[in-house]
Image (cartoon, helix red, strand yellow):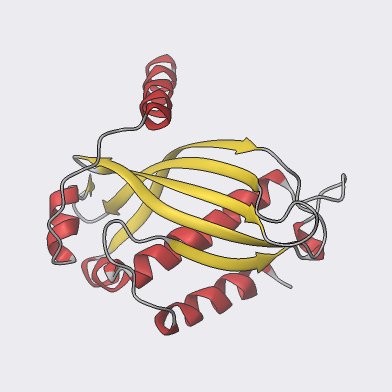
Length: 182
């Protein structure tokens, strides 16, 4: 199955899935490994994980009601950093669940967590992959990242930012170190 077709299927299905309560709702998508997801080791390609996680972020945005506002205001989602930990491989036709949620925010940035949980076979219920992604919504016309406060207002939500967990704090510190070095 072509990757664009997969993305289209999930995006078209998003309006028919239950609305998620912003900002703490969790998107859960059932998926499986297609032949074109495989690498030379016959397991899911490392890069494919990142692409699949894009689908989770779009689903989260759509089901929280942010995608419509973003399109209307010409905001585009942009990632600036990612940390992925692979724990178990995914093989051809293996079923898994992609879980996506927002775990932290400040000023113009969000950290989203993606968890891929094996749903079939002898390792069902085990975590295959966990990732943290740093990003925000960018407004190209004004050449700026949109403040979280403005995003929350667009969704009619008032919420305090959660404290950064130790993992998120370490991720943010590593990102700052790399940013300074580059």
